[in-house]
Image (cartoon, rainbow, N blue to C red; front, side, top):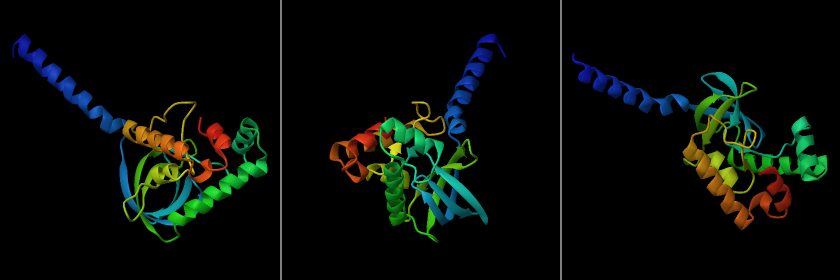
Length: 189
């Protein structure tokens, strides 16, 4: 093999290897699972492969309904009481329970495990709707940002879609954006 052929082969191998990177960066596992419990708007328990699994819904963030450091920080930042912030979290949980029901079969796309060991997941309802997108579109969730940036696990196309839905819901003031605009704007920045 001459030097030119070797260079062409090496370049072809390099291009092929680089083309595979997106698949490794956003590796996915697809599963069917049964809803066991809705903890809040972005944390769900499911039965998957006979195992109880805690899901963190990727790409979204909802107001907290349980006492936590996060709840305290968000209430202070948004200049509202803890009770007010918890009431938003309870409204989100109520909304989530209108779409997700105990015993319901759903499809999952799992990207990774989060900081607390929860599976970072997109949930698809029986009608094919992506729950993560729907909760943002209906005004009950923000797009999740890690230190002001997109989380590394979420694919760019999903990140753009969620942000597009967020802009539309802000403009149309649906869900929590109706009557809680300033607080939602604070939470979703």
